[in-house]
Amino acid sequence: ISGSGAFKDGEPVTTSPIRGKAVGGTVVVTKSGSKYFLSGGDSPAKASNNAKAAADARAKARQEAAEAKKAAQEEARKVAAAKKQAQLEAAQAKKAAQEEARQAALAEKQRIAEERKQAQLEAKKKAEEAKAALAAKSKQASNPKAEAASVAPVMGRPTISLFGLGGGDETAPPAPVKSKPEVAPVAGRPTISLFGFGGGDESDKSAPASMTAAPRGVPVISRWKQSPDGSISGVISGSGAFKDGEPVTTSPIRGKAVGGTVVVTKSGSKYFLSGGDSPAKASNNAKAAADARAKARQEA
Image: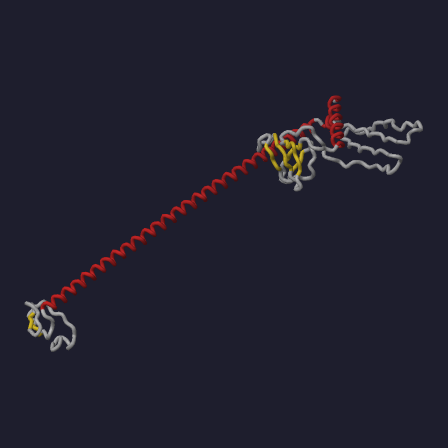
């Protein structure tokens, strides 16, 4: 516009709708009564084309805006779906972790229960052993005379001389040694002198007493063998914790494994070793002591 008191010259303006058609080189009047001279300008046909182009541009802009809105909505839908999927996967992972923790807790509970049961069986076994030992001790205390006479002195074996060809009576047994009515120590086995060389008084070292049957309440391990670490492997019977005939391996024992004896593991468990090699001396002494106790009981 130019020549207006309300606008600066050269300022772009848009009038209110005019009355009639706009023709270049004429004065037009708006519906509000304002007048404007149209300098130059387009013919009505050209103005109509421009209006159509503007309308097409606006329609295209609206279409593009609608498509952009639709694309934005689709993108938002995808984001929401991805978020929902992530939440579902997180929930499933949490549920799986909880189930795994529950299974682990159940397994731990079963293990503790099994260990407690085993400990109770061991405690019950030890209590029965202690009760049996106390009963035996009480029985011994109630009859001290029979206990004192239960073990008789063991006669020593005579020596044999290979030079006894001169008619000497060197093979005659010595007279019995008198002893007090108490438990007498078992005499050591004398040596045999060969031509008088090295005829020292050497005696065998004591060995664990051999038994023919396991004490009451003590499990039996047969077909056993001892490993380098001291543990015993074999077949068990008479145990409250294992089935008869079940193969077992104990913890390391205290001392050496000898057949026909009771061994004790470092944890305190007791087992009777059936079979195996037991020292001959221990077997003979045990048999002699058993015979002496039986004879003393018969005489009493």
